[in-house]
Amino acid sequence: MPQRQNLGRTKVLEKHLTIYRNDPDNPPWIADKVFPPMMVSSRKGEYAKLTGKGFGVATTINEMKRASGAPYERLTFDFSWTDAYTLYDLGIEAMVEDLDEAFAAEDGLDARKTAAELAADWVYIQRERIAQALLMTAGNWGSNTSAVASGDRWDAGANADPRVSIDTAADAIRLGTGVSRKQLTLVCGHDEYRALSRNLLLRNVMQYTNGGEGIELTKPLLVGVLGIKDIIVGGGIANTAAEPLAETRSDIWGGDNQAFLGHIVSNPNPRKPHGYGGTFRWKGIAPGGRVRRYREDNPPGEVVQVNYVEQPSITETACGYLLTTVTS
Image 1 (cartoon, rainbow, N blue to C red):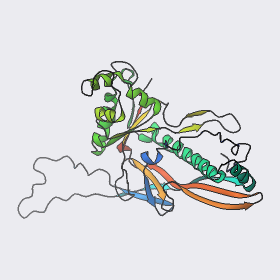
Image 2 (image 1 turned 90 degrees about the vertical axis):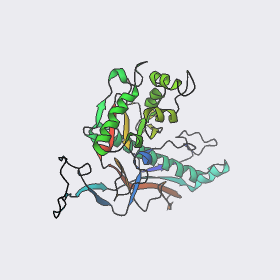
Image 3 (image 1 turned 120 degrees about the horizontal axis):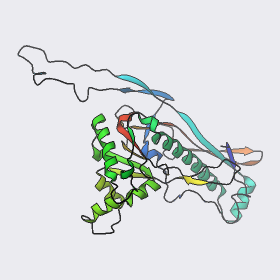
Image 4 (image 1 turned 60 degrees about the horizontal axis):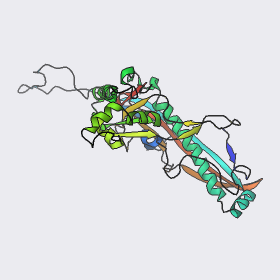
């Protein structure tokens, strides 16, 4: 990826601004939803883990019954300290020459605003790619991953039941962490969500309780029939071709026949339990990233930088479960 984008009049600053990008009115970004920010003040850090003990130990029915004058049994526990994060600086900058800005203004265009928006989009796209790779890689989840049987794939036909695969994932998380199904969120891409919303068996189930045949399975209805908390659908689009090749656009999330179920804590704290993970972010970064502007003289113009200082991390694999082959 180039370090600087020069938004010259041959590409962007034409009389009619003809550039396609991810919808700015309905931003498709989900990186901060699936890895919620945890603000930190150090570049490197660690967090404490208390493994086990939360569900007790095997006992007889007479254990923990104290005789008169005897001490109570005492449980012991230890914290383990785990390397949690090393923040990286992710960003890009774009330059608008003064002359190009003047030409753009004559045509009613704001070149500086365009530069800032495009730089931000590039950073957002890269953050989505990082989050998607972290969440949707089976090797990151240990034993908490499985392939959906062909007969229960979400697009497999009238007898395919998505609840079977959701049951598998939810039961594994509940037994591993105690987190109930009602606290879990499903994450997938457009292709997988489309298959889920058009699943024939679920439509047949819902027609008897929600208005008859042909009912549209909206997100609230799907959340209800699956017995979970929420569904997050990634919608970002990225160019997969390297420069100077022609653009090849594809979904960042989805198209890989995968879906993820996990416990997301909306406002995590590095010092408290925070589901399967989050984004460790330097406290000096605003929610939309840090934007900085400075002047250059040769050629004269303004440079805008957009960056994040952060690292998304999986901190507890037992709180998540990756389903593969959810669609054919």
